[in-house]
Length: 128
Image (cartoon, rainbow, N blue to C red; front, side, top):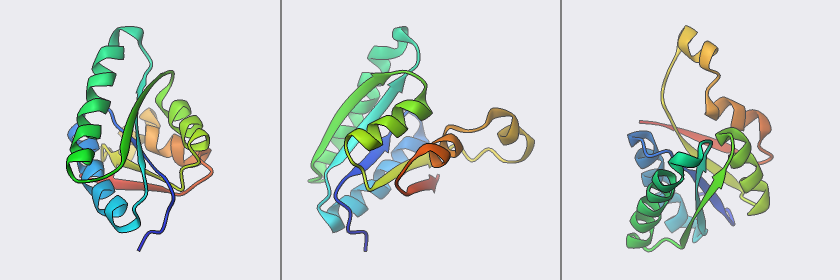
């Protein structure tokens, strides 16, 4: 079982975030770890949408009895996620994967891969 002290859950409003949230519910219930839900908004016009995504997932977690709080930060998602993980001293980052493979993934350089490269704690990538 995971015996962490804090879990970070980045969300982007996609179904991949919902799959990751379901995994976090299980981990958080086992470990009693609090969860920070983080939505990164690289674009000021998307701030309200990011807040709505974070709040929705926070509410889902709370309904399951998980201690969760939601944050929205401005900036590039991989940087925001890595900085927030350090700030809240997360032991684990749980992210949904968009599951792109091959050339598309190489060209895009997915957020998950960037976070794995930057984070100081383990990153669990959940495939939908």
